[in-house]
Length: 383
Image 1 (cartoon, rainbow, N blue to C red):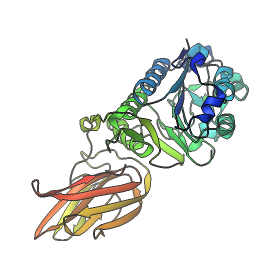
Image 2 (image 1 turned 180 degrees about the vertical axis):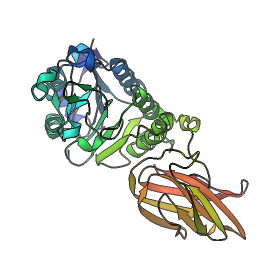
Image 3 (image 1 turned 45 degrees about the vertical axis):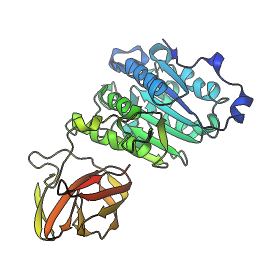
Image 4 (image 1 turned 60 degrees about the vertical axis):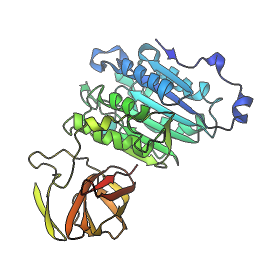
């Protein structure tokens, strides 16, 4: 059954749309629980996951128009019609379009990925499935939005005959131009636990990721939340991936209330964060346990392009991140190509060595300041 959260009869006229100045958010959410009518292509819960995502976007994340297409209604023709016809006349060059797909995909292992709609014929994937190359290349021509966000939640496991169910990851999409963020539940070929990503996506987009507490959820905030919460609940086996060309501060939700849900997730704390190695800092040796050490957390396997550290209240501050030696950071400094994960910040207050830890998962500014009451550095992550 197809549920339209915004009635077509209530949509504004084309002239009214173009006269409107305030940017809006549109979403198309697709859930395919069983493609091709084949039990082998079943993905239990995909339709209900899509319904929950759609309701969260409409009711809590500030989306004014949410279209949901699930199960038997999620045919190739119906999905493409939504972009080519239904949204083409209502989305303007000021708006944001989010596309969320939960279901199976194939072709990721041959760099020719497809999304599998309900009416896919496994014997004729090119003719009946949705080509990622075609959708990525045509979407901006069909729907003239200012920004695009494409989110895929594919299991990336199993097979049907000669088809390996390796759908598109974030890096599988073609270059869609500026202001496009591509997000996937896991990296290419890496398995994803059904239902896991959508649960955390909903928590994040409805306020859990709003660490700035400004009522919006940016791309950086959303990804930071997911890259912490999803690996923590899957023992590191599932790592969300991101790609595209976009502004880290692009808001993907508005009107949200911050929910401190990440406080319930085990994230690294303090100096002993992770195989063991020693790092010399002024006055002491800091012991750091890298990924794979006893008790260490499985950490993300990607690098962050650039992070600016701003450190206040201490003398001779140093920053030590994964797989990097300690660097001096007098007040403010930049670290480039840093592996995502915890960074240890140390310095002096008088003759006393104080330190803190901050988890880096996105480009931006990490701030640390000395807390005299706790006698330590308190640090906030980028985003």
